[in-house]
Length: 114
Length: 113
Image (tube, rainbow over all chains, first blue to last red; front, side):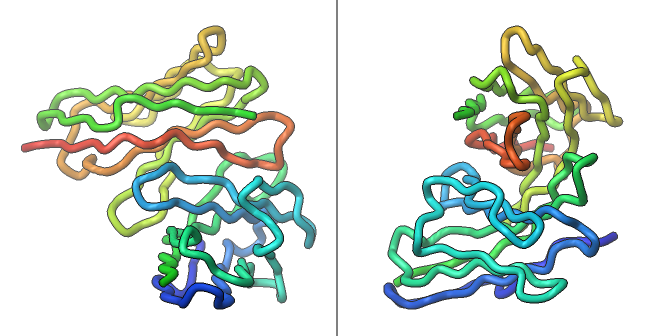
C-alpha cells in the first residue's frame, strides 16, 4: 500500500539554525500539507500546497517557514532560524485530488531545538 | 475560524466493552469529519470519516454519527480489543478550505484485558 514517508525521523538542532524536513508524498497525489504537534497538544495545520504554490497557511506559518516541491517527488518544509518553541512533531500529509477528502499522514519528524 | 472540542481526554474501558468519543465543532460550513488513530511514535491513521450529507457510517466495529443541527459528531468502537488502545483524534474541514483539517485535542483510549 502506498504511504507517505518522512526523513529524518528525529532532528536535533541548535537555536538559530536552519532545518529542512523532507517528505515524499504518495505518488500521483496533488495536494500536500504540513502539520505540527507540540508534545501533549493537538495537531495543528501549518500550510497546504497545490500546483506548486501555497494555497493556504496558518498564523503559525510566518516568514521563518517555507515549503518547496523541488522535484516531482519531494516536498520540504524549511525553518530558517529555529526557535525553542519550534520543537514539535512535524507531519506531512497528502491527498489525491479534488474528488477525494482523505489525507494520508506520514510517520512524522521529531524536531528538537536546543 | 473552526474550533473543534473533543471529550473525554482519557477513556479506560474493559476489553469487550464499547467506547464513545464525542466532538463538537463551531463552523456550520464544515462538511467533512475524519477520525484518526495515532499509535505511539506513528503518524495519524485514518480509521473512518463522514461527510455532512450522511448521518451515520459504519465499518465493522467502528461507527461515526453526525448531528449537523447540534454540530457534534461521535466515534463509537464496539467490542474493544487491546489493539484499540491509542490516541484518537477527531477533525473537521470547512467547505471553503483547501483541505485544512482542524483537530480536536485527542482522546487517550486504554483497553484493559
